[in-house]
Length: 73
Image (cartoon, rainbow, N blue to C red; front, side):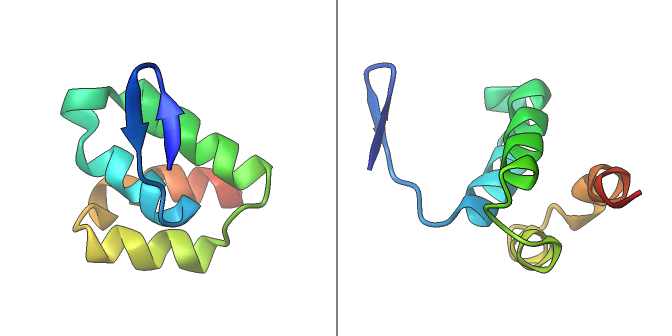
C-alpha cells in the first residue's frame, strides 16, 4: 500500500500498475500513464516482457504498443 495524496493505493507490481494507468488513462490522464511507463522503464523496475504481458491482460496492448516501441528504439 502506498499513500498518494489522501488515498491509499495498492501496488501489485510496477508493470501491472503501468498497464492500469493506461487502462484508466481517461480518468488519470495520459500524461500520468506515460510518466509511469518512463519511470518504470528508466529505473529498471520491470522488463519489456512484463510490461507487454500485463498490457495484454488489461487489454491495452494496442494503446501501449507505440510507447513501448519508442522505449526500445
